Length: 146
Image (cartoon, rainbow, N blue to C red; front, top):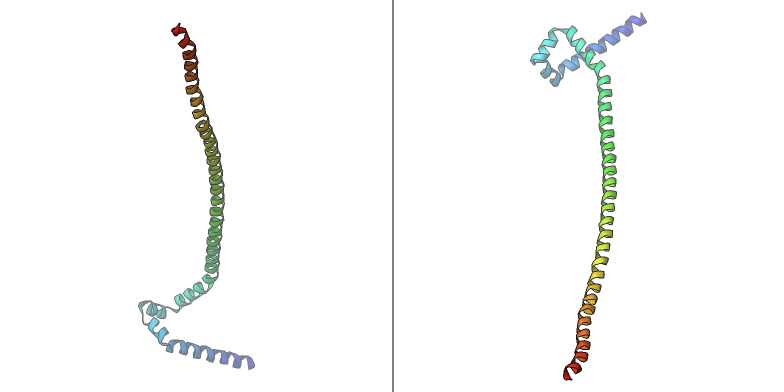
């Protein structure tokens, strides 16, 4: 007797919940659509659809979490890969710039050495023939006077 009374109370609660749902304007608007009318006429299909929707929430949620996690991990991995590539590119640039600096230093030393030595060599070369001519002129001058 107590069990039947409990079942009757549950049944009354269920009916009051259904009447509240059917009285809700949003639900009434949904039930007046084509799909709502189709589902109202086929309660077995409505129950199957409700059961499928309720059971599909967990796998779809797990899949979405997997997709989001995969996206975040790939984005973070991409960032780390980009940082790695920038690091390698920076080291390469540093090596190239160091090579250019050494090359320019070497060329600068060579050009400065030539800049200093060539005028001195030309000065010595040009001054030697004039001293020889003067010495020849001094020696040849008195010879002509004889």
